[in-house]
Length: 343
Image (cartoon, rainbow, N blue to C red; front, top):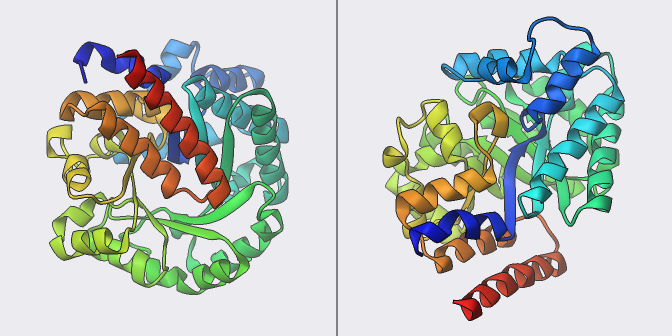
């Protein structure tokens, strides 16, 4: 691909994003609006707010995660934030997304899990009715909250399965809370019809990815980048066609890898590991799906065919039905066919 064409083609191309946390995908304008709404004085402008989110390290990320959560206080806050996030994705020509959310992160709001969940689904439905995008929710049961809470949480969100929620995820501290602790809840979720993914191989090594695959039978791995440390695991990912939801900028900002030159994304891609590119927590990492695609295309000099392959893979490994996959695959194919004709 000619380098000068990269930004424009990426801007226009249909995109799919499978690893996005709604709690970390707010717009700065919306968050600043909440801060003013509740008459807080901690920041005086959007620019000051953006400066506050220039992350120093992973601990700073965690601090900012909980800091911004305190401004989400009503069902309307959750509904509007979700709407704005999905709208923003569509304006980047994202046609399908799967987004994580964890209502238990907002206990201080005083709202019930049900109220937060329903507001979040409502925000998605409103965006879907106004923009050409579809979004499925994956509920993140947080490792740090302990396995003893996990089954109760599964019961709380099961009524929303196939009514906005499509899957179950596992995030949080993978070093101190191993995936094996959540084996039973994942087994039960699978029986109920939840699709399964788990964060692994980000802060912990290949053993964490193995556990997510073997103990949880996760269909996809969130991040999974430290699988590169175990050639046998990489071979297994290829053989079993287990996809990785990779977030390059996130991995660099949280110091999993020092730079894109050290990042294994291209190694996985060239070996035919099923990889997808994602933004994780866009404003917190100063990126978005468009920027992520520009970054890897610039660094690895990907061709049109490779860009199309990345997007098509994301559809293939999504939790969509086969009929829906065919629909979105055709949209992607049509875009690239038209581009080839115009060249």
